[in-house]
Image (tube, rainbow, N blue to C red):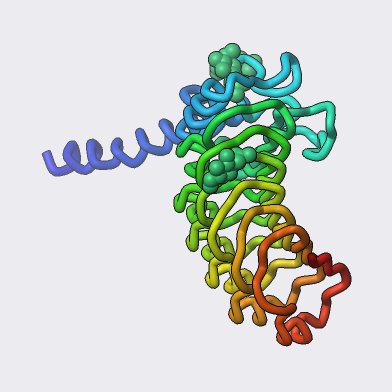
Length: 251
Ligand SMILES: *[C@@H]1O[C@H](CO)[C@@H](O)[C@H](O)[C@H]1NC(C)=O
Ligand SMILES: *[C@@H]1O[C@H](CO)[C@@H](O)[C@H](O)[C@H]1NC(C)=O
Ligand SMILES: *[C@@H]1O[C@H](CO)[C@@H](O)[C@H](O)[C@H]1NC(C)=O
């Protein structure tokens, strides 16, 4: 009786070992399958591409309905102009089984209308280029959720309204391009939190007012295009703090 009992207890770990080794041999989940795009990101991408009436060019990426495939995950350069619209993905998540969208380009594709709110759920984006379209409406405060963004281009559109102060949360930004556009109101003081920012393009963006004193902290700034905007006051004295400044376009 006692012996029988201990035998059946032994069977539990044995069964577990067998089950695990079968899984490792490829029975069950197929480990050699292609990684999949985060389902929420794939849904969001398809939704706003639909609203914008654009889709991946056939044979480039989104092969068989999987956005993170083909050129989106091979060595094709994101800036390659033959690939537009385009995404790049990082598939190193969950042991190489899950991809997040890190780059998104919808450049000069005659897209008309507002930026759908879903776009701001792609929180793994490091590079976003929506320049050269006919985008209208404001930039949503939800832009603040793109915590990993380094390169952000929304210039040459017809975006309006005030710049959301939440842009000050995008502390990984290296390059921010906002003009030309039809924004209004002041430059948010919070942009002064972007301590890594190297290039700021606000020319013809529609913003007006003063360059806020907080911008004195942006010591990595090497390029500022600020021509054709209604800035009041003089070029601030703190511009002397921007030790790395090489290119300055004003007036
Ligand atoms: C796993 O996927 C590969 C490639 O798609 C296929 O050749 C193989 O038969 C699959 N194995 C199982 C156990 O489903
Ligand atoms: C990807 O392909 C699927 C299926 O062909 C399609 O429904 C979807 O709209 C495509 N998405 C993009 C972003 O091109
Ligand atoms: C820019 O915005 C103003 C109002 O803020 C509007 O009257 C004007 O038509 C807009 N221009 C463009 C090109 O969208």
